[in-house]
Length: 259
Image (cartoon, rainbow, N blue to C red):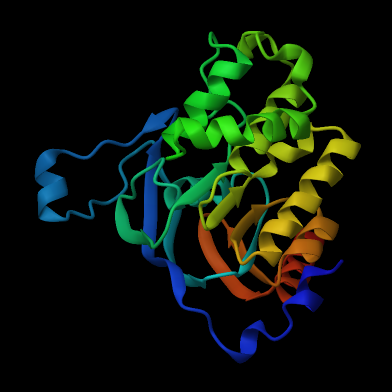
């Protein structure tokens, strides 16, 4: 099912913003994050970039309404994953701000939030608990989480011993059961096998049909068109186009063809 067709009337009535981004920027040093002094922080300093520093993202401004499905497009190293981490508040910006009205369910890095030495069972309870689920709620959904992940034979196995694909299974299964209104999905699903990936995609469609907001990073045009109605095109850390997903992909492909 084409998500764009399902939400074709979305543009008729703009939904209230759940994410507000204004002049957002973050700066890194080569191999480590640039650190500002307390004086810079309190003074609101926007120091010039020093030798060895670069802006992973700068000057990005946009809003996202409840229920929108946003595809974040761009080549590797252009700021896509950094943008998701800023929205998830995993990173703090050097410039501007991002305001998120509602909780976030992030599937950004397959190891994020999971403790390697703990078992799969313990990690389910820990990760869900960190996102606000009470133990009784996890108890009620535990079998559903494990069945979806198809990982019942490894409940008492340390997480660090799982394959990358198995880590994706359990991470997606836990995160997609959270009640948070905003879901962030990076390219981690590319690690999973084709059958499980399609299972995850059907789950994403269910969440979208229920009114969730989606940020989706992918290089797969078919997946982007399947889920998203709107796109953000990042190039060299700049937001160069905010438009329909079709317009964004056309612009991206045209730029790529010129290289």
